[in-house]
Amino acid sequence: MAKYIAKRILLAIVSIWIITMITFFAMNAIPGGPFNKEKATSPAVIATLEARYNLDKPVGQQYVLYMNNLLHGDWGISLHSGRPIWEDMMSKFSVSARLGGMAAIVAIIIGIILGATAALTRNRLPDRLIIFFTTLGTAMPSFVLATLLLLVFCVKLGWFPVFSSSDPNYTLPVIALSVYPMAYITRLTKTSMLDALNQDYVRTARAKGVSKMKVIFLHALRNALIPVITYVGPMVAYILTGSMVVENIFTIGGLGSTFVTSITNRDYTTIMAVTIFLAILMVIANLITDIVYKFIDPRIKLD
Image 1 (cartoon, rainbow, N blue to C red):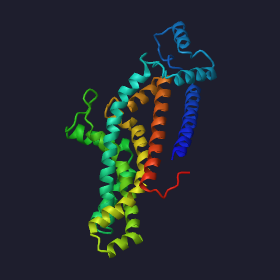
Image 2 (cartoon, rainbow, N blue to C red):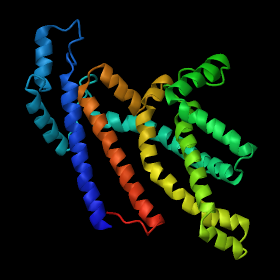
Image 3 (cartoon, rainbow, N blue to C red):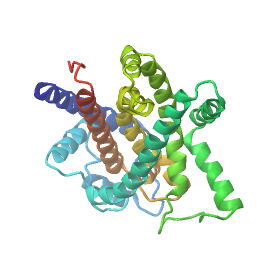
Image 4 (spheres, helix red, strand yellow):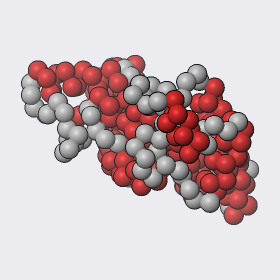
């Protein structure tokens, strides 16, 4: 296990390094600069600002300087606000983590319940209704659902405030973010549950007179959750990174909206910091998933 974790951490570092390199050079390949749209700023002031942030140097040298600072724990200063990026990023991430955490919990709990219900009522009305709504949920992008929820429950019905930047209400954003992963978990759980119910160990348990509830929860459902757990890690990363548009629609000041704003402002240092931070989160989520996967099913080889 220790060898496997060390190997995964090494691969994670290489992956993050490749991501930083691609992001940095792709970002600098776009014409224009972060200070070009400041119409009231004279060319002399722009030149001074670019020299201050090393933007007047060749791109390769900028990358080396940036990585050197990053390895020493310096995430840089925002070119737009002038504040330290790490402090701003942590402040915004607490909002995104709260939103993403609630969406993940809702998706996992409801997805497993609906999936198990669909498997146990196969080809009956509850199963068909669940499959209909999960198909709808997987086909509808989160930003479309968020817009519909905003239009119906905020604008038409007035049940929730349209703008909530100072005191955000997470109900509608959580629904918008959780529907797709919940629908996917439902279908995944149903398929795995049906497969588990047809296995020999379930038939043996039934033949021994084990109660129906024990067969379902202790034997079938436990094994059916292994594919779901595999999906949970990438799902959490998806929710955190996929909340960008949803945060903007509901005017929630999280990390996603900060990332979108930084792209609009050509805030290079913030774009790099948020990209690297989200990449690290995704790698850690996948690593934790693999380790938990091993503990649940010891037969799995971590090679």
